[in-house]
Structures are given as C-alpha cells and as structure tokens.
Amino acid sequence: MLFYPILGRIFTPAEFGLLATLSSITAILTVIASGKYESSILIANTKKEAADIVGLVLTLSFVFLFFAFIILQLSAQKLSGWFNEPELHKWLFICPITAFVTIIFNCYNEWCVRNKYFVNLSWNKITNAAATTLSKVFLGFVKITGNGLVAGDVIGRTISAGTCVYRAIKKDKDTLVQISYKRFKPISLKYIEFPKFTMPDQLLSQIGGTFPILFIGAYYNSIEVGYYAMTMNVLSIPISVIGAAVRDVFRQRANDDYIKRGNCTVIYKRLLKNLSLAGIVGSIPLFFLLPGLFSFVLGKQWLVAGEYSQILLPMITLSFISMSLSGVLIITGKMKISMYWQIYYVLITIISLLLGLFISKDVKVALIFFAVGRSSAYLLYIFLSYKFSKGKNIQFDQMA
Image (cartoon, rainbow, N blue to C red; front, top):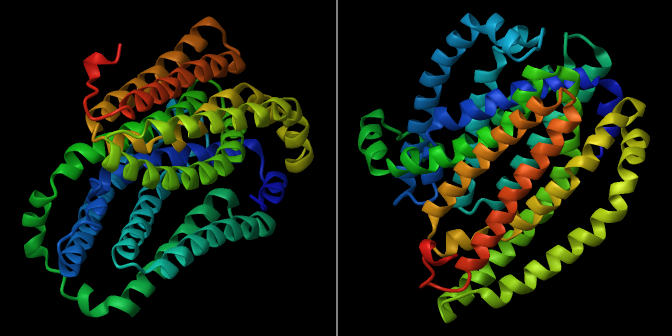
C-alpha cells in the first residue's frame, strides 16, 4: 500500500487496466489447473503423502497450463478484441506462467502450514509482496519493457516462487525426492472431493471477482478497468486484512460456543453490532473525502477512481462485515448452502452489470447497479450466517 502513490504516478490507468485483465484470466487458470488439490496437503495422513500431493498438483498444473498457453496464443487476437484491449494479445503468454508460479507459491504455503513452518510462511508473504512491488517500481523507472507494471508482476511472482522452491529443497529435500508419480492416481482418487467440490466453489468465487473487470474491459475500455481495479485494490486490501484477522478470531470463539452450547448466536450478534457500527461510523466521513484522497495520494489522474470508490464504498463495507462473519457456515457444516450462495453471488454480479449497461452506456450507472446487486448478496450471506448461528436444528427450508 505504501508504494501505491509511486506506482500511481509511474503507470497510467490503462496500464493498470491491462494488468487487471491479465490477473483475472490468471486467477481462473490457477483454480482450474490445480483442481484445488493443494488444499489437501494440510490433511494428508503423512508428510510423504503430502509431498506426493505437491508432485500431483505441479504435474497436473504444468500439463493443463501448457495446453492453455497454446490455446491462448492461438486465440490472442480474438481475445484482445473481445476484451477491447489492444495490448492484451502481446501479454497473454504470461497468464499460464504466472498461474504456474502462483500454484508453486500456494503449495509451499500449504506445506508450511502443515509442518508448522510459521516463520517461513511469514517470509513467503513478505518476499512475494516485496518482489512484485519492487519489480514494478524498478521496471517503471528504467522503462526497458513495453509495460513495466505487467512485467514486474510476473517477474516478482517468479522470484517469490523460486525462493519457495529453494526453501523447500533446503529444509525437506529428503522427503521431496521420494515423490513418485506411481502414487499420483490413488492420491488423486483419495482426495477427489477437492476438484469435485472445492474447485467449483473457488472457481465461482473467482468468476464473481473477475467478471466486473472483464465486463468493463469488453464494454468500455482499459482506462475504466484501471480506475475500477485501483479502487478495489485501495479499498479492499486494508479491509481484507482486517476482516481476515477478525474472522479468524471469531471463527475460533464461535466454534467453541457451538460445541459447548449448540449455537454461537451471542458472539455473532455482538460482533455484528460492533462491525455494523464501525462500518457506518467509518464510511460516512470517508465517503466525502475519497475523491480528494485519491487525487492527492495517487495523483490527479486518479480522481475518477475516487468517484468510483464513492459508488462502491457501501458494497465494500458490507463485504467487510460478511467476510468477518463468514466462519459460521463452515462451523455449522452448511457447505451446500455456501455453494448456493456462491451461485447467487455470480449470477447477481452478471445480471446487475448487464442491466446497468442496458439502461445506460455510462460506466458509473453500471457500477451503481453492480454495487446494489452485490450488496444484496452480502446481505443475504449475513442473513444466512445469522440464522445458522442459532443452532444445529435450523434447516434451510425453515429459515423463512
């Protein structure tokens, strides 16, 4: 976040828009390529089995992304036209590369959690943030590539993945050299629920998150994508960090209450009240200050992003509240309900943006409809989590 004032002045909104489009494609490829098998590393019976899962994930990902690379190259010009981004075809080749190094990073994070390498886990995230940010800043100043923002992102992520490989080999070489492809098939069948259930859930989440970027690029232009991407980054990153911290503490406390009492309503209502109060008190003054803050901190070229942030602020506030309380559906075992909600989340995102486009060609109108539609999804999630916090006997058909 500290480097955003520098990056905002080095690069244009159009360059941020191109990176956002490429990142959206990469995020979808990352989920599909791994099948989310990396999530099973944590629950593997033995360290040796966990190592075989790493081998399985990297093998599946490499094969899938190799063919994805070919397909993207063959359709580069067409995709560039679809997303209304003239420079897209020059950079599509990095999407499979970035997806693969991201999967390496994700695998090693899961490996660190499983083996309680918490110092390494922290350094992984520090290295990733530092490498990507500093690479962007350096290439932005020296200007030796066509788009230093995009090139810096992939170089930084590759450096981060490389350090993960180095640390893994240094600490667990004896285990990793025992990986055998002969065990890949039985392991893939043993943990088949991850590509069957976790992967679709994550894919829906990624589609819901990336669709606005791809939509704005297709029907407007890369500059508008850049404004939107900067808005979401500046507002969502701090809220996501705080929300994740609150969620982790709440999840532990709520789980204890649920086990002891059969419900976690008391702590849920208390946290909901405090989060709502904090959201309202913080959002009202921030709403009036945002355009000026964006212009002052990032540069005058980002004034429009500040106006977009005013439209999206209530939605992001609701996302903060719902994310902080999101542990309830996991604690109560309502994963099917979570899947239904993900479907609604994606559908309302698509429908609201298309409706806004149909009513007006102004991107701000589309964003208003988008904010209202997605806010309804977050309100629904808060409603569901509150109902299920009441106890084990609550059924989906009784909630009305």
